[in-house]
Length: 127
Image 1: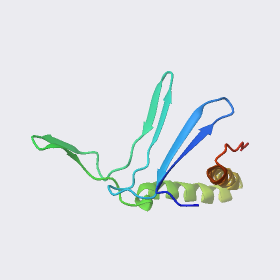
Image 2: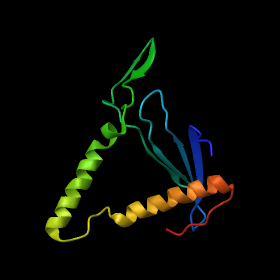
Image 3: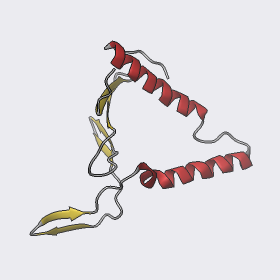
Image 4: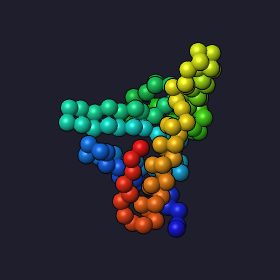
């Protein structure tokens, strides 16, 4: 199977909602990762992280800091919080908030997407 540089996955939830995931391994302008959720009553957006939120508006146009260049920069705080939760969970003798089942579910979705791409057919999945 050829490996495209851009991939799209269409998911349909048990309740009939649609989810589109667009993915690319290449971005010449920085680490572009965002989430947009649209619904009948509105929209939620999680924007890309930048070094600052400063924007400059003048006769030359609008300028702002470029996107972060690497995922470690983007998720450093998230990784630290996850590690802190794991350490607290051990001390409190409780399961960590993010567990093995979360990783398994993500892997099952990824494997179903690959199977669908290879077969050209939808793959039913219960996670």
